[in-house]
Image (cartoon, rainbow, N blue to C red; front, side):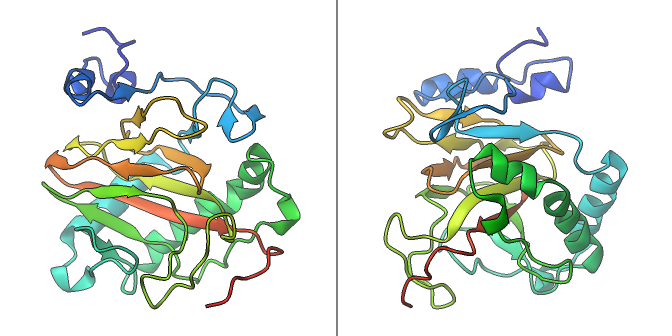
Length: 243
C-alpha cells in the first residue's frame, strides 16, 4: 500500500497495483521513478534511456479527448501503417482537436528534447499543426508490439529503407492517454547501453522521450484498452538513404 512502490501507478494513486510482482515473474525490472536531464552518451545520468514529463496536456483536455476517441466508430480506426503487430490506429480520420493538442505538446517542448539528447537543435524538424503525422494507437487484450527500433526498415512501402545508423530519426515521443489497463508495459531491451531490461509502466498524461535507436517492446495487454500516441523527430541535415 506504500506510495513509494516501484509501480508507476503508485505515484498517482494511494495503492500499489501489483505490477512489479507480475514483472518479476517475467524476469523484468520496473524502472525507478526518477527524473533527470543530464545525458552521458545514450543514457540519462541515472542510467535510464528515457525521460518522463508530466502535465504537458491539461487533465480535463486529456479526459475529454480520450472520451471522444472511445465514441468513434470502428471505421475511424485502421490497421497499422508500419507494423504487422495487432493494433488499431487513428490517423487519417483523426479529429482536428486531437491532432492539434498532440502537436502543441511537441511544438512547445521539442527544442528542449533536442538539447536533452545532444541533437543539434537547428537540425531537428517538427511539422506544422495541420500535418497528420500524429497517430493514436489502441491496443486491446492480447495486443503487443515486439522488439524493435523506431527506424524505417523498408518492409512497408510507405517508408524508405535505412541501414542501422543511417536513419533520419533522432528521438521518439510517446503520450499516454490512459492507464486503466493491465499489462502493456514499455520495455527497453538489453543492449550495449542497457545491462538488463528496464520497464516503464504507463501513467495517464505522461510524455516519455527516448532515442529512437533504443530497442524496445510493448508487453501484451491483459485487460482493458491502452491508448497512446507517438511522434518521431528527424534530423533535417542527415543524408536521406536511397528508397
